[in-house]
Image (cartoon, rainbow, N blue to C red; front, side):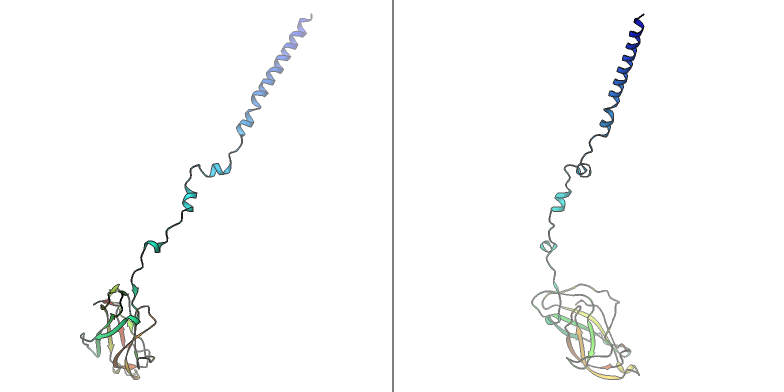
Length: 208
């Protein structure tokens, strides 16, 4: 008569033990799956990265490895002459405007000079300045001391234009490329005080 309760108690005890084992098996798995997260620096920057070393390495200044080239030719170290051997046609005169390096160092001519007719060496320009003739491309013209570069200059006779308002000019004022100082070439010409009339055209410097 007493064996039945003992058997029931054993069954209950076995069931409780099995439930406890199941809870024990499931309980630790959740913390293990969450784990302790790795530090942000470890996940964003791989170990052994060379980025910090590269960013801290100073670059070499370009000036230390690239020597400066020749300076631009300036009026102070140039002399000016012209050559009218090109002659003229239809009331115009073609000539070569020649700049010679009178300094002791090489210099560079590049581009178009500024040219105007003027009353005298210190006078103001008369009429319109020379327009650019771009039929020949600009070139780098390196002048050693004593060497010269030339630009094609064309002058159209002022009296070809009825509304010119003819004014005597003593010669040309010439500005080397990218220079604010000028040279004077004595070459008497008739100028037009009417600035709407362009008597002069000038080409880019070429080697002579």
